Image (cartoon, rainbow, N blue to C red):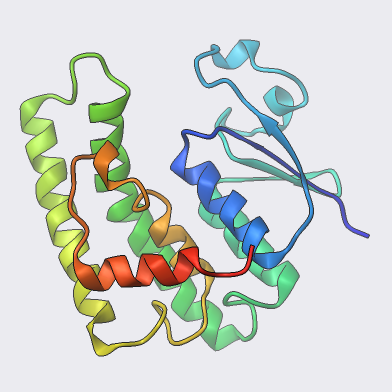
Length: 195
């Protein structure tokens, strides 16, 4: 039986994405919390030597390290043969959304949240305005995409695209954002998934 271990942090949306995938896929795994307040050189082994960029999440699959949340999601979909891993065509659609997420929501929302939640002075006003404008465009795009009534971002089956996209959207108050009704209904469907 394969062995999985996740090194993450509860405040990391990127760690959350991988943790959510493991949960909904029903993949048993060990978990180790990494204190992100520790300088990278003081973080525990084996995390320090296996995490290529010194960041969470780090997934070990039978001892082999995988880093970067969306790359980990792609690996897990391939392992499961589900959540986008069912076919090459479905995986192509998933990859497009993963790249969009990394460049759009994963940039705008993650950084907006960080500036408001984790810095003592908040994000610089011009930076915050830019991030908020990007987020507004991103969430409008997502709302429009879901307007046709499908249950999930590709179709009526969840995929790792859904998991990547929702990584920071479950806590809108942390970034002082509003979630439109179509996106909220989609988040509710993700929250209702087994696991």
